Length: 174
Image (cartoon, rainbow, N blue to C red; front, side):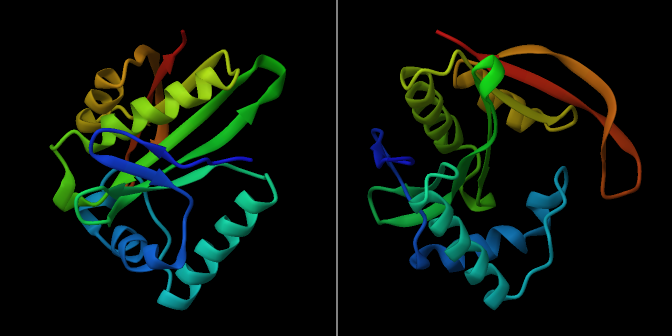
């Protein structure tokens, strides 16, 4: 079974469900979160269909995706997922997003630590994360979660203003 429920001190990491729709819709429509990654402009109906497809993918063992939920009030803060699996080299790429109002509280690094440890314990040799080189907050999240910076590839990511930035690569192994 993919995407098992995991818990940390403050968080529950669980499969997506329809109760996540409002939080995920907010994430997709918050311009503060789109500074470094362009998100699609979806209607509520399209977002609900996306979440249903994600849940279906998890049920059929196609991917691993978790909602990040605050234990104290069961509020969905964001999501974290395995975006790419490279079986030949036994590694995967993980991405995450946290609602803006919850930035700076350590939730992203707590979730990333739990998920990357789970993936490494499950047999992956390496877990990788990337971010726009300008996104210093995300770089800090990865470092707090035990990832080491491997390097930067310049001019790889298109910014909202039409310019290009480099992509920072981070990895974690045992």
